[in-house]
Length: 131
Length: 131
DNA sequence: CACAATTTACGAAGCGCGTCGTAGGCAGCT
DNA sequence: AGCTGCCTACGACGCGCTTCGTAAATTGTG
Image (cartoon, rainbow over all chains, first blue to last red; front, top):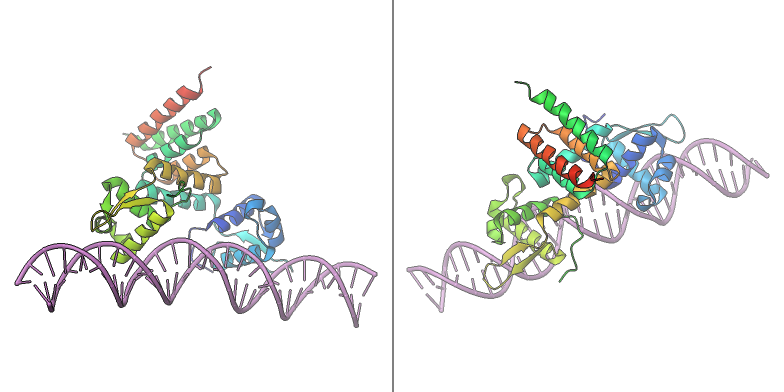
């Protein structure tokens, strides 16, 4: 068993992880079919990628059935958080605020989303601002 | 002249771009010295990277002096925006709100930063919410 | 059993990036 | 002129990711 994958998944790996997160444990075929058309290559390519992900500790598999069943070995929030943090360090000097502001400038968020963000802000300030 | 670099800079390229953005047009040596210790390799490595960046249209150079002077060919906000947008698509299905919330959950922002974000939110809602 | 379909396993190739060694050119100094 | 040092140019290598072809194992079907 791998210690704990500090690795950042590649684009292809992230696409596969997304399927596993959404659909739960799946066979190679199920993942392959569920991949978006623009990232789906040959079947054996998907297979190989998933095998490597097991080696790297990003996924694990149950071999008790003929068609092995793969499951994500890393949490969704944890992984996405690492990706965000990575970009934050590389491009924004570790400043969450700068990243957030660029994200909001980039794509117009809906009113509902803005409300969500506002709520989160309130929650954070409530926690951090005491005395 | 390249059309317009739709390319996403690599980590190494982003580090160099950051120096160019901060210091303005610079020689290879100046960039090399200004790089953070943990990403600085040999001098010729920096040189080679910057030459490739010119080929790719990420930078241009003035050869009128013996030590060529390089300048960024892509804007800082535009480039960082592309990186953010890229991650937003790959990991958050294009939802800015989800990315923002993960970023804020990730690293505790200072009170000043939170205020900045709040101000930005107000500006956005003011623009988008009008009757 | 023979045959087809599915799945896994293995290996190889291509590619881009990062890294560097080395060579050649130029400038200044003695 | 010769030496020394800095700069650019060029080529090469290693590595990891992606992609796939092909073989081997397994299961299902007539």
